[in-house]
Length: 292
Image (cartoon, rainbow, N blue to C red; front, top):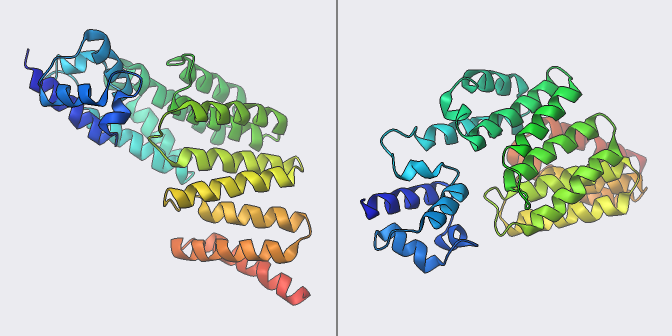
């Protein structure tokens, strides 16, 4: 067996996922051991290689049969397209992608890849067909494909999708019962491949709390998410979070504080050229100015 070939593939996949050697090694072995494996100096124990393969999202056989294993970059591209469509609320696009890939052996023969399709199938079943029960069945099935004692990052993402459906259906207490455990599980993850998951979770948690009239709690979660976004140099949802803080203060009749947050949100949306939010916030601020 060519030790360096396996080490090269581990290094390639690790870098594709944006993991450091220490992050890959966490809970599996030492960083020094990963370094030796990648250099081809040592061959990993079977148990170690299995855990590495799980963290990298491939079957362990990938390292032994590289020539016949489908390329991981194809799955990553499909995942990227689904993520983009999900963020842009392009549910018809999600439907088309899932339909294209659901007979692809690359997805059917790998639990994590199949999970990706089931997750997004659940999303479009709700948003396109308004079939709540079928959507939840698909999302639950997706989680069960990989679920263990500690939730994975993707399992938390899928739970977030369930919470959003409950929120849209005005089942607010049930939505909270999804978000709160997800928040606790998120704390158990040693690192996040997608930094935005925390801000998205806190934003949706805050929206639910606002609907329930728990404005101070909502503000607190928004502010925590804002701090997190700034710490990570990530603009995603930063405008929405500032807007939502302002909206909460508006509901509390504290208009000056509300206005200050709305103005910050406006600056961010102008940078992002989000005309929908820009015009809406400008109109709201001008209404307040007229009243004053």
